[in-house]
Length: 455
Image 1 (cartoon, rainbow, N blue to C red):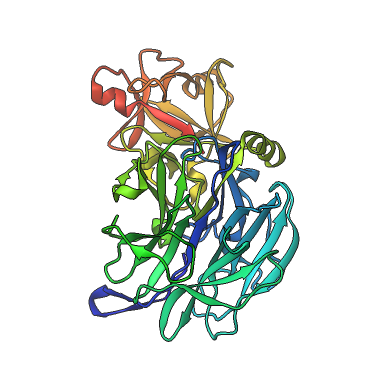
Image 2 (spheres, helix red, strand yellow):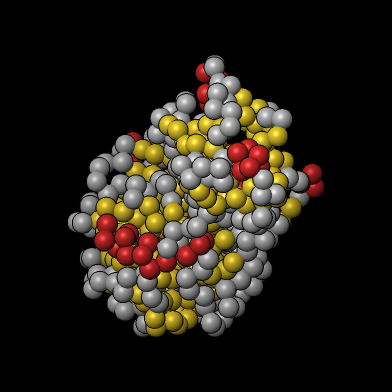
């Protein structure tokens, strides 16, 4: 997402805005997993990294960040930073990566260029270059690409402003080196933001955010020709959501629509599902049904094979830390704050307060202890049944208080609960958002004591 905003009296936003088409790569025979590309931001800018990050998922909903959630590629020219990365498998094999040439949030900056890399397998990145897309005195935001079989060319789409209105522009290419002249691709007559196109068999779908009413809409076309898409849905969602992408499940007729909140202060991703994209029916998913990479912004999702999924994990590695989600408050994660242990809604800074190394239990190797990432000499331990963060004093009492045993989730066996080592009739739970160990007897208690270990 990239945007320009002006503000009216009373805090109302009059948005004169960007748009950029996000063309999701299509699954091919053999694809059974997914890779996500993104950059990172957090509320107090502690996680602001304008470079390419990667995460993988076997199901398209639960994501594992790679390389400890650190960048895997960083631009070396232009502004030296990127936003809005896009990953696509090329017809000849291998991948192309495109991105906006912009670091930080200076959305007034004019730039006619985008970043580009080639990659055989997303384990290395070569041929870095900047591509000039046009000569207009405007931006070039959220570039993506699609294969137009009828033309035998790729279309690179992006947002640019012409005549005082942001629309979606396209340049055609065969090699992502030599670029054709810009053409207007999508312009419904008003400012739009971050359109996403799914290239289908017979029908192609374009989703975008309208700044007439702030809603996400879907359009469709029997071709991929410029100016051929017509809106066919009512508004999917109203609110501070943008940067939509459409992804089809690799193995069934199920679709996901992802959206990004426009501010790092509310920097989270949202998801909806549909059993038939033609029906104008999207159901929101809860945070219990999906996850996102930590601090991820404006992502791209590309289908990959199981072998590629395994190779990416082998090359970059899964995180050495975990985040732990509440079952009945799935937008909340376990964190420490002033040494108190609690659950709070994501996102927040310092984001490291929610990162834990689940190590062998200090009192029993069959259990686990929660070691803080940003205070590595401190662990979660209970005292007077209340759980807090404390430095390990080496005592047997501390070790016992800081050790828990994983058991199937008391409210959902696919999740996890944690039984106290030295008070085995008590489990870790939250009460008024504060962590403690208590006996568990009611349905509400079981929900409070159930968690999901993720990233």
